[in-house]
Length: 118
Image 1 (spheres, rainbow, N blue to C red):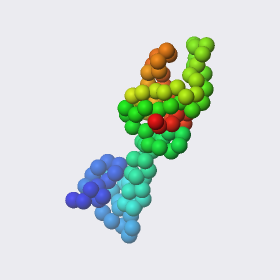
Image 2: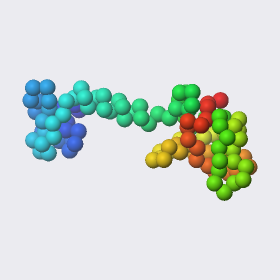
Image 3: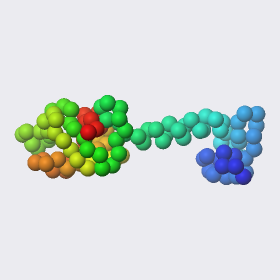
Image 4: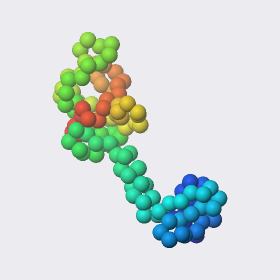
């Protein structure tokens, strides 16, 4: 059976079409396959991390900090123009989506909006 005919909620193949919607009699879920495709596309695009110039960031990239950043527990902080090598992208709820190690400071989490790709 075609994958778009499977129920996206319970993954059941026991579905039928009712006008432009598909219906699952097992869990009573109704969906429009064209709307479901756009939702999947949006989810894939939301995983992409962009820098301040809208360049796509990847694991292992080098970036430059574009703004002086305060660091808790440190008197100096991070100066604008500091180069950071070998970043790792992480998922976070607070926006700190880059994990990195900065010389003289140590392991840090940065927001992608304060860096630009080198």
